Amino acid sequence: IKWDMKIEDAQKIYPDLSINDKYSDGRVAYIRQQENKKISDVEFDEIRYLFKENSFFKVIAKIERPFRSISKEGILEGFKPMRGFLSLRPNIEAKYGPVSE
Image (cartoon, rainbow, N blue to C red; front, top):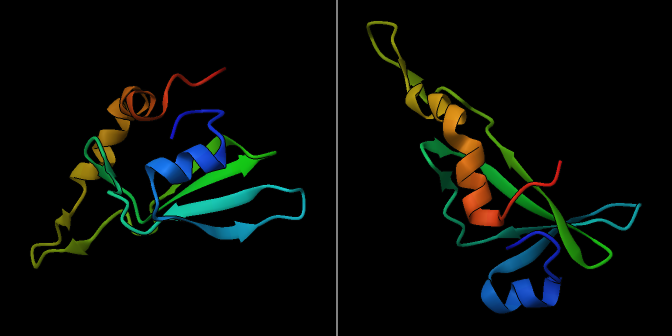
């Protein structure tokens, strides 16, 4: 989904795009049922696509549990994905298009 894409066009590309939430200000959040939630080395728990006035304007990617487990030695397992944030913006822009400042 590219910035400013209309919902009808997004649903043609991603038929699994479905409404997740509606907000009182007219925004509508969508999720993809078959979403690959990994971008770069970061795996997200949820990715929401927000549309306002029928145009894609925001993506919300959540990590609810940054650390998957702790080993017997007390080492945090799954910490590597968090380090991926350093390179995340270029990968997000490659997937969704340039971010306007």
